[in-house]
Length: 98
Image 1 (cartoon, rainbow, N blue to C red):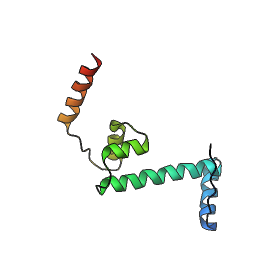
Image 2: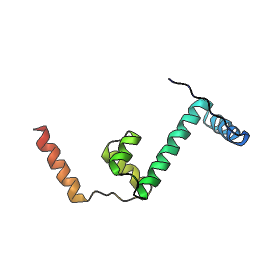
Image 3: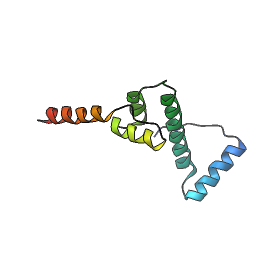
């Protein structure tokens, strides 16, 4: 795994240490989790503002399109896919598998 140095303020380091202690994890693990949580947050905002597509959101976060739609719904962002689109997708997948 590559290594990267990051300068943190005393406050940021204290927060990181506290979280690591509370979760009984190493600081580096907590830092990586926070980094990914931040990426998810930025992608949610970008999607909500129309700056990124559902496809880009799912690819960036390493999710399938259906996982991305479920992820959006956790935050009250409605699916851009209608129920008819969903049914059509299932039918297309069935035909492709045959």
